[in-house]
Amino acid sequence: EVQLVESGGGLVQAGGSLRLSCAASGFTFDDYAIGWFRQDPGKEREAVSCSMSTGFRTVYLDSVKGRFTISSDIAKNTEYLQMNSLKPEDTAVYYCAAVQGFCNRYRPPAYDYWGQGTQFTVSS
Image (cartoon, rainbow, N blue to C red):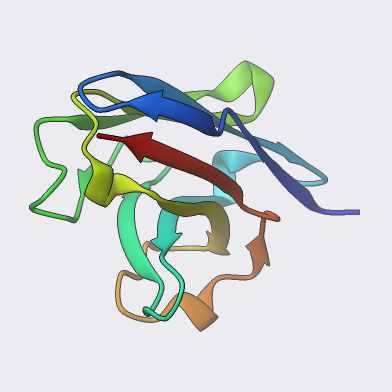
């Protein structure tokens, strides 16, 4: 059974840091791109970042560039989203997702598997 499980959400003060984890089971990262998405209530889900087993990594959102970084632990089949200098506008539910092949920023439905999401709130 394929599963993606996010963890690391919670409450953090503005300016603080948080690391989200996405643990995958039932498949390996070799053939999949792993994306991070976020969604605020009433808003569309937006792509935050993506990484591929080729070593390609990118952070899509201009608002988080320089503050968010992504990394992978292939041995643990886990993807991380390190978030620094957090702002209240970063508050959202964050999801990780996997798609076979390539990253796809603008078509979240293209992703094959999704985690349940993890909420974190940045207080001002």
